[in-house]
Length: 427
Image (spheres, rainbow, N blue to C red):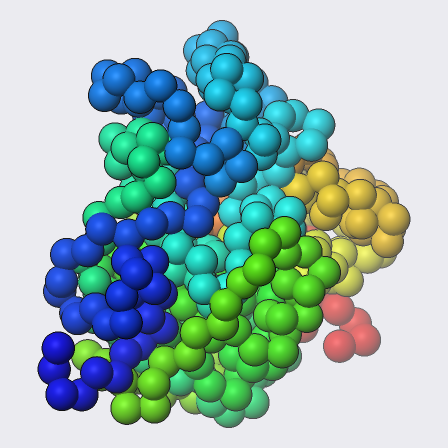
C-alpha cells in the first residue's frame, strides 16, 4: 500500500465490497455485489449463459432484479417471446423484485423509487445506463450479458479500479437549467471518451442545490463520456430521499480531502445556457437559442434520463394553455407507474393531452428505436433521451437532437428548437 492511502468514493466502495481497507487505481479486484439487474433485452442472453455454466440457483433471489422495460408492453411476437422467457426464469428462481407491465417502470427510475439501491452500494446491470445510481452515492455500472449471468450465479464480479475526475459546478445557474443541461455541457467539454473507464465525481455548490431528479439525470449520462461510474456524494438531499424509500441499510462514503484525481474541472454554471446536442453524438452540445432554424417532426419527453416528476412538471408548466404545433408529434412517457399517477393527480397529464400530446405507459420505447415513436427517413426528433447516434431512434437517415424538458416543451409549441422565453408571455 502506498504511504498516502487516501481514496476517492469509487475506491472506498470497491474496497469495502472486497473486504479490504484500500484498493489502488488500476488494480483488478473481485467484489461482492449488492444488486444485479437485467431487462427484457439483456436477460434472455444472460439466461442462456447462466444455464451454460451449470448454475442451479441465483446468489440471492432478493438481490437479482428484473425489469422488462425496453420493448414492453410487447411490440411484436419476438419481444413477447423474450419477455415470456424472462418471466419464466423469474418464476423458476423466485425472483422477488420482478416488475411486469402494470407495476413496472423504466428500470433506472424504478429501482431508486422502490428503494432497491442506496448510498455505498455496488451495483451492476446489463444496461449501459446503470451508472444512474451514482446519484445516490453508489458505484454502479453497466456490464454485458455474460457478466450478468456470472453475477446472478455468484453475487460477485471483477473490476479494474478506476481513476477519478472531479467536476466542480459553481456559480448561479440560469433560469430553466436542470441537470440535463449541466451534463450535456460537460460531455461537450470533454468529449464522448473524455472519462473513459474513469469515475466521474460531480461536486460543488450547484450540485448541492440540485433535486434528486436532476442528479439522476447527470449520473445517468456519465456513460456518454465513457465513464465507469458517475458519482455524487450523498448529502442531506440524498438522505431525505433514501429515508423515505431505502429497503436496506446504506453507508455514505466521502472522498478524502487529499484523494488523487486525474483532472479537476471547475465549471461556471452562470455561463451555461439551455443545451441541445446535435446529431450524431451527445458531445455535440450547443446553446439551444442558436438552433432555432432547425425544424422538427417529433418531440419525446421521457426515458430513464428525463421521465421523472421534475421533467414532467417543467414540461407541463410550459405547455399549460398551449397547443402543439400543427403537424408535430409529441410523445410524453412517465418513467414509472408512481410518476404516472402523481402526474395524473397534479393535472400534468391533462395538460399534455389538452395541448395535443400523446401520453404513454412507462416504457423505453422510442429511446432505443424500440417502438412508440420510430422515425422515418429524413425526420428529425428533439428528445430528452440520452443518445443520438446514427439510427438510434429509427431510420439511419433520421436525426435525433438531445435536450432537457424546458427546450422540449417550448419546441413542441413552435415546431422548431426553441427556449421557453419564446412561448411564455409572462416569462
